[in-house]
Image 1 (cartoon, rainbow, N blue to C red):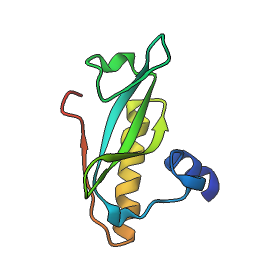
Image 2: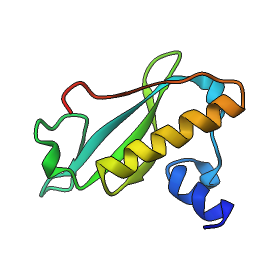
Image 3: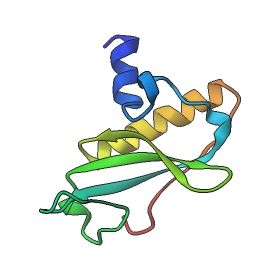
Image 4: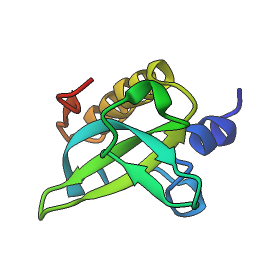
Amino acid sequence: MTASEINQTLFNNCTDWKEPDWSQYDALEIDPVYEDPQGAFWERLIDEPWLAQFWTVYGHVKTGGVEALTDVSTQRLATLAAARMVELAAQKGSTLDYWKSARF
């Protein structure tokens, strides 16, 4: 896999698939996402993670809120992506906590 392909996987919700400025975040979290029959997306709201159609890794913004960094097909891939993001942030001098939502 090329660096460009890796970035397209790790940062597919980021502008131009570029690595974000890690200093904006203090943590990462993973949550399932479900699209209901009306086309509405339910992020971090479903009580049944096995219904997830994909999983999102969010950066927890220091000033409040979250930003979606990447979407992947499984919880396992989301966990691997988040672990790699923590490593990349550390290489740039940022420390990120990592947690999954308490429900999963």
